[in-house]
Length: 351
Image (cartoon, rainbow, N blue to C red; front, side, top):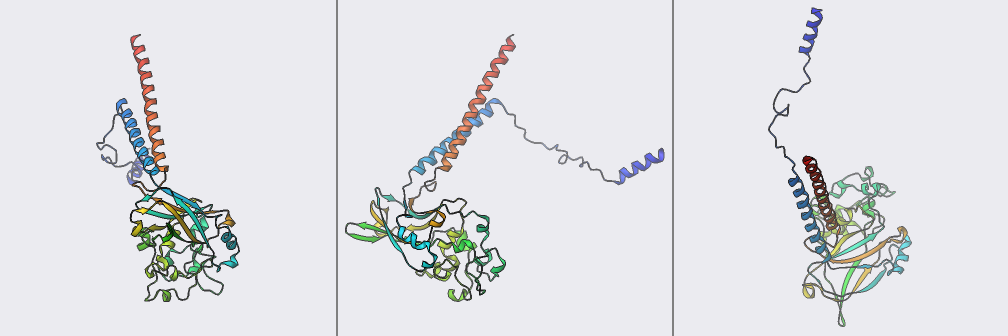
């Protein structure tokens, strides 16, 4: 028996113990702040949180309601062009349409032009993955081994630049704005650059290094749905071509919802439009290239101003109001329960 006990003790000494060291840190004996939740502290926390959220929510909703915005649906107003674009063989035929609208009030300050799409799902998994980030960084990669298929290369082996379903479905309507002032028509100056995120423009997208942009894309071909190669996306500004074209960059940031809008242009505040867009009659001249009837979609042009909280989206304000109302209501419920229990306690103490 003694031999058995001695061997067991020797084995216990040989095997390391699984218990942590007897230190203040590993035995959780370090000094710590342990708050004491009293009725006053709990109720004040709920009521202060509710008051803060309610005040912020009201401020956000008031700011969102002060945004001036006008939305023009041109899906059916350009019905002739829509029917033309239903046949893919007419891709090279230009189709123009004009849409008149009226601004009842001045749109002061910076004015932004967006294009909106409805029922266009960019959140499909295969669609989101259908791109080559290495190619968009200007690197020489084999796109046929990427997620770009079936928009990676043509049957003769010529790679597409850029490749992928996202790039192939680039929104390519051209929208110009004209101001009908008295008997004259004035074209509103629009800014093509400065609309994308700085990180996208200078970090995530790069053109291949070459002395000539057309030579940099030699040996590649445009995607099937494009009218011109990537190095001619902006024929007026050579620095806005290739993968760093801002219309292309903005489109490549896919939306999580089927209805979305992307920034298209900014109004250049000069001349007659220094203070923004004056009230009056305007006309959109649209070169219709992007078909939407096959997926039962719609297209919009949106003119909007900005405030300190952003555009006219009340969601964040409503969320703050809901959280503030919930916190305040919880505070009142806890107060009622506390008063009820305190009355019962005093009743029993008197007995």
